[in-house]
Image (cartoon, rainbow, N blue to C red; front, side):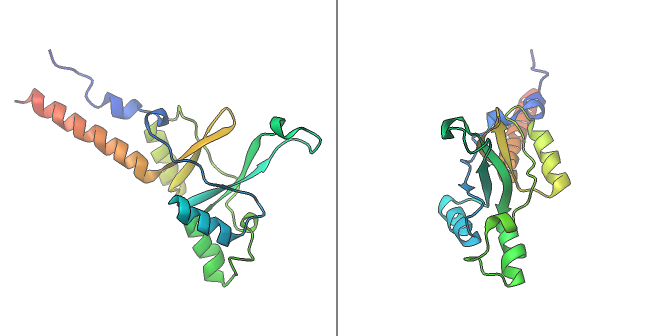
Length: 161
């Protein structure tokens, strides 16, 4: 008996099925140069600009990180370098993209692809219970979807043998 579910896995797969990239985080006061060095060290195309929520009298343990913005390599080039700004003196909070669009681990790969294509994103932070658990990139999703397509083709090939 043949499995009639060819293609179902790739259409229902969520971000839980992908190993996410470790988030690269900087404070709002970091310079663009600091962010660029960190991106190079971590082999990342972006850094998340993170502050803390809660009032200053709250113990640090009770404060939660808050994504204030994102700075990408493209932002550094277009908003700093191309405008002749000094990356060692320009702080990330002045050039970051904000607000940041995020997804959850339950978001389907196809939904993330649609979101990225509609907004011209190449990476999106993944949040779970208001906590950044990683970043997903378009190439990570493409690799996963292509793997599923190859498996579907192999399955179809066995049906027609």
